[in-house]
Length: 191
Image 1 (cartoon, one colour):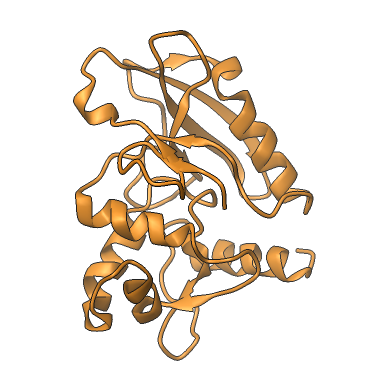
Image 2 (tube, rainbow, N blue to C red):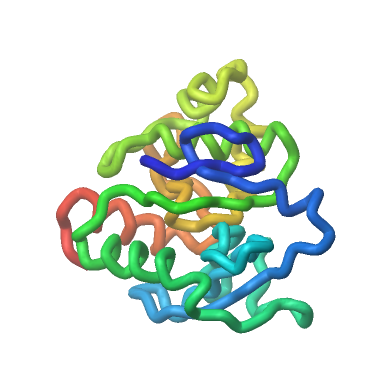
């Protein structure tokens, strides 16, 4: 996956630290998907370029806004590239994302989210394996699970590729049925 997490500066994702830029404007748009209308938000740079993607949420998703915040600005053009890449992903034409990212979270969560980027398309890992990918002790599965559940970039940061220790489809903020459908899409099974 070729994205840059601008909060960590890692090459796994281009990221800016929107939490420290109080003048940052948040743009949003929506797009239709196999999961219903997705809400995307991003931080607009001062130069007027494309937004760094901050959130992707599905209808009914736990721990996520269902509607744009009052101070967000509707700007489909600023988020046109994430929409295009997600559309290509759902069509089976894209296996990774190449986007600037601006998720907001603790250092621990950002390390776990960056480790999600290392899980190849069509593959899965357990929470213990994800902990190891993030440089954490495998026994930290509960903390890792909490970070995965708080992933603000549904689909783009592939939290759907994380399974329980026994291979079960445990937890997914957007619902286990959607997790199953994403894994089926990536395995070549149409849903």
